[in-house]
Image 1: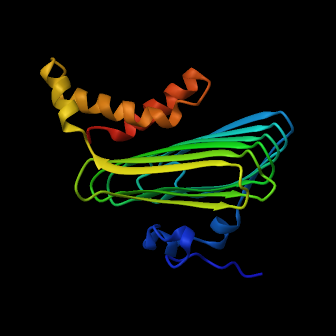
Image 2 (image 1 turned 60 degrees about the vertical axis):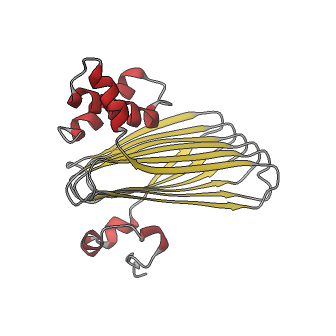
Length: 249
């Protein structure tokens, strides 16, 4: 069977980099990592898409009753980087996603998630932060689907982008497909620039302007990793993101 290669006309790829799409091979599109979480189990994975691991990465997750899947990701490659996640949640299962796209240049970095609540009492929480400069782009496309039998679902998505220069951009595309009537589903998105008033306030109290701006960026992206329960690993992700920031702030 011939693999149909994605184009910008495909909804899930609409914000991708066109030149990067032309370089994709069928192997890039056909390769999925499968993760199965047993009943009551917890599985956690971390993805760092830097210059040693750019390109397209696809993950398919099935979480059985009472299980929990936690994915934390940092996309900071200097070329196109995309993490795509498909999740199916069983009864009382949970999915946690925390992601940061960060970088400059001309690159596009993006997360695409499709979470299906297939049975009742499931929960999901997705927190994504984007920090970009030059003419870089950060994207989050997140779809939540709630099946008819998935009553008592509680699902949330939150995306915020911080653009450090006028040429940078960000795109958010939340999508809800709900067939149950007793659910809580929320999504929020905000795109803006550095809070210069806060930076000025901190500088006025003796903090150098560059340090003040970096502190604000640190607090901004820390939200995405706050749910990571292991402090050393959480701090390692945060420091890797700040290393990618460099002198941009």
